[in-house]
Amino acid sequence: MQVFRPRTASEAIDLVAKLLEYTPGARLSAVEAMIHPFFDELRVEGARMPNGKEFPPLMDFSREGESSLEEDDVSCCQC
Image: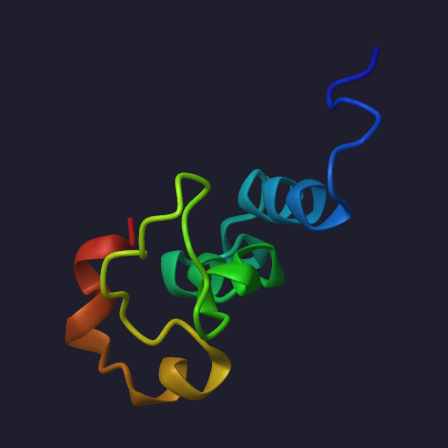
C-alpha cells in the first residue's frame, strides 16, 4: 500500500516519519519539527506565499535560533 504520492518531497516523508515515531524519546519535539529542512524554504530571505504576498513575521526557527529558546518558551508545545 502506498501512503505518499510518487512526487512527495523526501523532506516531507522524513518529517512525517520522525513525527510518527512510536518511541517518545526518538520522536521529534515541536521545536525540532519547526527547524526540520522541510520548512527551509520559509526561512529564505524574500520568500513569498504562492499568491505573492509576504509571509507573516516568523520566529527564528533555525538551528541557531533553537539554542536561544528557553525551556519555558517551548514547554507549552511539548506533551
